Length: 246
Image: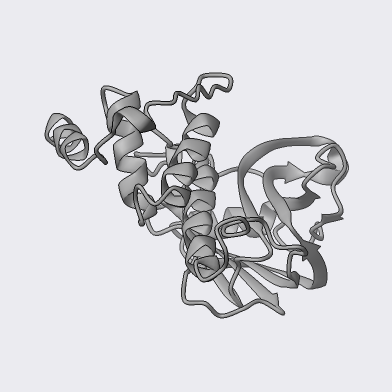
């Protein structure tokens, strides 16, 4: 199946000409994830492909043997964001089409919800980090929202039910990471559980992140820690309802 998809992607590749054979080399730590984000976004910017899915399939076919090109959920999300942004700015002159907005929309995070419960011991809490200041969080969830005893009760019930944290209008602008932990913050004994990157300009009033697009949680293929139906819901004030989802 991978070989057939690779062949299809190669066959659908834009035709190059002598005049277009200039070469640009891109690389990162492995030359696959962050490099892939830039290449896929450029393909859409250059109108080689209109859809993020097509750009990512072509990149995966050309870069890898197993079609595992860009695989990190938040990186995939940002490629979709760029596709959305190109559509919104397509009417603008070429010189400014696709450029980042002069100012990102500010939104206010009101509520965070886990739909179904991770099968872990200890409580669960999260911290919010702003891009450019990842050493210090700007907000931490209350310790009482999901205590070890409360979590144990939910896990014993088959990991069904929801965990809800009220945030009370935390202002966010630009790129933001929400990192979840298992354990108790006050004790200093906790581990990273999963995380997600978002951009305030592209979230919706109710933004749902399914397990397959939730960093680290997506690696649980056998659903030992996160049920297959597990998802994250982020509720915002001030977000635009675009119908684009997460």
